[in-house]
Image (cartoon, rainbow, N blue to C red; front, side):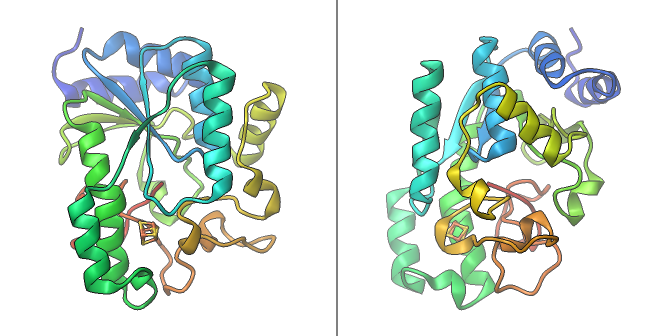
Length: 250
Ligand code: SF4
């Protein structure tokens, strides 16, 4: 077993190119010692990975970040997934005190008023809980695809996250959206009802809206901000939301 995580990431990245997503997950489990955490937004890509993990009983923890501002449809798919597979999707929540301070300082929907408020909200509701979810993990699995947004072209199947000090893997990085949709339909995987209503990317309810045909997948996220790379700080090297203007996320 390779001990150096950087070397392990390089090796896995080379091997992943010719494998299926299931083979990638199995390879990851075989090669990585210690905890592997998959963070799911309960979106369609992540539901495919949850299906692969649960249906094949792969020892990878499935964790979601409940920001407290999710759509009712997201809770529906969360419950349906647990019912279908008989497994728990673990949840991380914002720290109560930090949340109370945030609301005191910027109001209930402060993110609409200033980008720094939005980053602070994502910091309390997503980035800090993510840090706890990944604490002590050796590897992190995500459902990122290469063509989802501008900065994701810089990523790969597997890399070493030097800030979080773990191996970060994207097992469906080379899959297209239609291919994922076809897979989940053929395998009866529960998906969020909002996908059929023009929501390709689903995050917090007040920060996500439907997109028009032909618009980029993430155009409905933080739409009031004039950015080409609207992200929340989860998939960027620096996890400090105050220091990042780009990232990606749940
Ligand atoms: Fe807050 Fe919106 Fe970020 Fe959710 S997406 S954590 S509501 S700013």
